[in-house]
Image 1 (tube, rainbow, N blue to C red):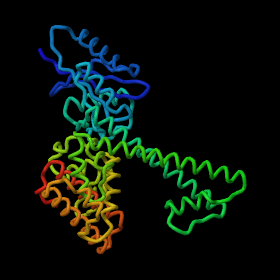
Image 2 (cartoon, rainbow, N blue to C red):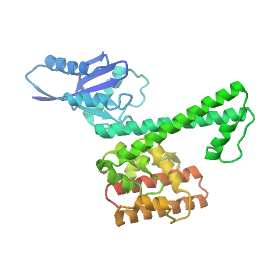
Image 3 (spheres, rainbow, N blue to C red):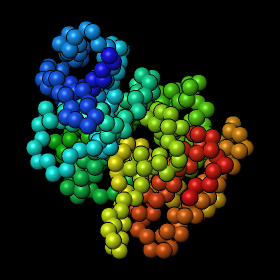
Image 4 (cartoon, rainbow, N blue to C red):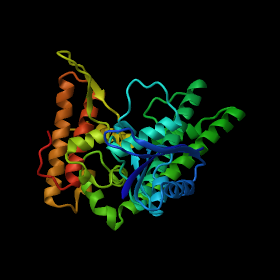
Length: 377
């Protein structure tokens, strides 16, 4: 007899809690074990072998493991899959949980995960290829250094302001940096500023090196064509385009563009009941990194004249098919027009930019799935 066994795993950096369960339709589920082990995938393999030995060799077993997306990333899933064990990663926001429960323990969480696996109460997380995942980590590392550079800039500005030095022009231009380096302070103050400026120069040089490497990665055969297509949109350059490609993976797993926008947390929420309608902001439930990049890209769209194409954009569009360029131009015009219309109607800028980011996600989906004849509504 073929028996179906689901193993829910509540995983932490310090331990794994494993719950083996056999679903029974119309009766109480059979729970065989609920134990805690040290954080090593080999312990899970040993647990599965011991479970098979306990249940008996006369039956065959269809065993599937699962755990919530979290700090372990894809590593545990890849290790178990390589060992021949079925494993899925559950998206936490899609899991069916019991309402009214005020008791939360690792063993209860492991049992809940096993129940979700048994009855389909979840959506599985997309697992990228190793190549895509490695590029994603590199791109995010670059963004971490960009945040560090922003922090250093804030520290330098605050230091100058505390000691009575205020630059009147636009900050962090060539002129501003020259002004900073020409400041003459007393010994210890000068040493402090010099150290800050050394950190600034170091971070700037690193980011320039990272950006050059990202350009090399984007020119590889498996990415170059897709990156060139996405760069036809206003606000999307190499870094954003490559991030969208490696973190989304297969765009065709989304049936429509608005489903892709919802996956990024750009869909608006609603809390209505009876005749009372209450509209909410975007859900922010999804890939926060891509959502941030698309919002930043939309900020670039929401500037300039409608229909205007800069020399830089024309250069980026070179080499693409006429159909692709026409689709991108239509999107650029529509998005910019929509932004100005929303502003005229009294919408706040952040609300308008979020709306543009949501629609931009739909156009990105259309470009990547070759649905460039579809009108986005």
